[in-house]
Length: 277
Image 1 (tube, rainbow, N blue to C red):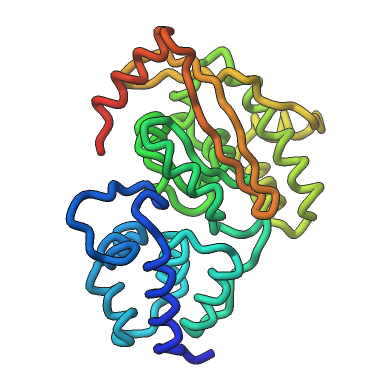
Image 2: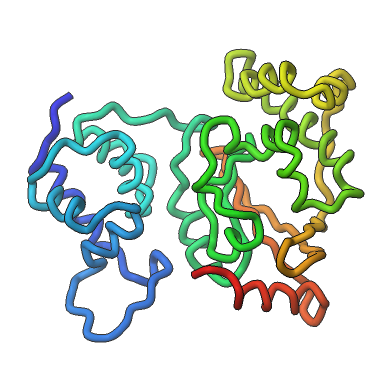
């Protein structure tokens, strides 16, 4: 497929101008003359240089890679149809939809953008964190640093002992069973050639504990409403976890809250102060 430079530039400009700062969790500020978002704001949301993004709107520069197009689609909070159109304009075939998709829907993103001071994350059915709030990063670590199978918490749980340090030791055994149970259910939904099945095969070769819990064939286990974390900076945190699901993309928004007036609530406020912006 060939890139449609004029169509790409016009579509990017139209999408950018249709968004307001508050739509994407940015402050409006004063003396704003731009209709919609500024180019540098979209570039920041897309994790690229302002010069690179500006060249696309000016019909210049090299053809953007699939990764760059995906980042722009996410930064502009595009719907799946808009994302697919953007890929075609850029000269690429659109990525898969559904369970294999890494594109977070705009509805979930709009909610996430309004939770900047609350620990929250968007995860796949394999436990891969796709987006985090600032407080989500402070609580759970920076998911953007993880690559390959280690993007999945389930994979890290059984292959990296350090992954369990954040969770209360009394919960480890049940969480192991819960991860195996959930993965077995995903494989039943997605089939033996799915990413879930490949993850299970990998864990069967790597972890004796996984082999043991996998052999029990448990299904239907669910984590409790309260998650207990042992945070390296503030200690024990007992957090309620609310879940909002996007069935079209098989993604879940997890929001962690503390009872007002509780010790955990005070610790979260402290964590918000020490967290890196």
